[in-house]
Image (cartoon, rainbow, N blue to C red; front, side, top):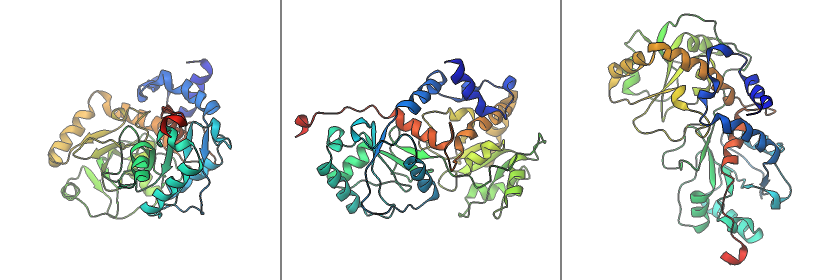
Length: 347
């Protein structure tokens, strides 16, 4: 790793004392990530097919991603030099219409049939299901789907698909509380969804703060900063994970199966910044896991690395180095290698 790239990486981490943490332990392959990221900035090219109609998306995250992509230097007007091809369609487009769109693309352009869509990607917050139409099958099976987090069950293909880091609900100008002593072991944020038996059981435990209604930004920042852990039940609202990381609250994701749709899974060692527990053991087992995690500075290390990781969960109006948009693009960059067949081989 060159000196320039090394210090460029560290410039993102100014809020954390350099003497307190091994930054590289956050990343799966730090020796590859930073130079490869620089190569991406120089080389990566995306061709965007022209949508037949004006696009509308079901979530601000989708809209933000597409807006950033359109104005990014990754876009090329020459499809012959593109590594990947973006298929734009509105969130409310029917499966039949999506299939028709793919059929039209393969008839008008030679690029789909070279890989059967493996060098194509699309954004769909809800994700696409499987269908019988050949074009939909190829799109779902081969193309990279970028969906919102958490992904809908059965509509996300691990190791191929990507989830978007969620938009933050707290203004970036907000600052984390100082080094205060944690008042609560755990904090459960209001999510507007019917609460589970686990959350109801936690209500009677004084070690946990259960938010009964949405709080304003200032109150929420205080609650995040005064809690060691922030509990998220997968399938409810996990969109606050980035904010928990930013304000030093270690995310605890409650789910009873392996988690395969976390944002930035190709980049970050999630086990270094979050804890994953099942719900079947109840509060007693959960507290045992949390208490054991805090031994030997385990919580402090996760908090520090979490603050570093939170830099990658920022969506900017104008994309900045290593922010959410660029890290999604980096995951696409990792998927750019596909086998392309000559037209005579599939004609």
